[in-house]
Length: 99
Image (cartoon, one colour):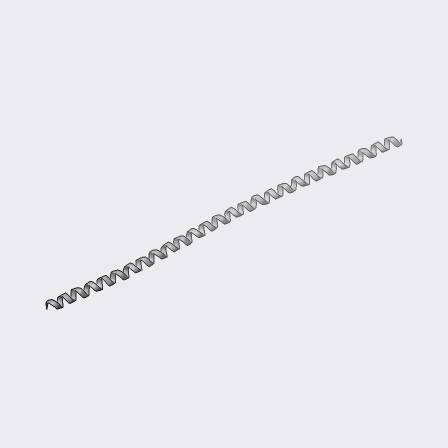
């Protein structure tokens, strides 16, 4: 009788240890899955921020290109007016000399 109680206690201890190990494995698995999910969320947030930054950079770059284009066009318009004025002055001078 003493041995049967001892066997029951030992068997219960093995079952308890086995259950505790299974529970620890499950908890470790869940913790790992949670950590991976958190990392995925962090990657998503970082990607969204990077996209926003790239979009802002693109907008800034486009605005800079447009400003340079307008400045170049204004300079060309000024050069054209200068040439037209010089040509008109030359014509006026020529007309004055011919009279």
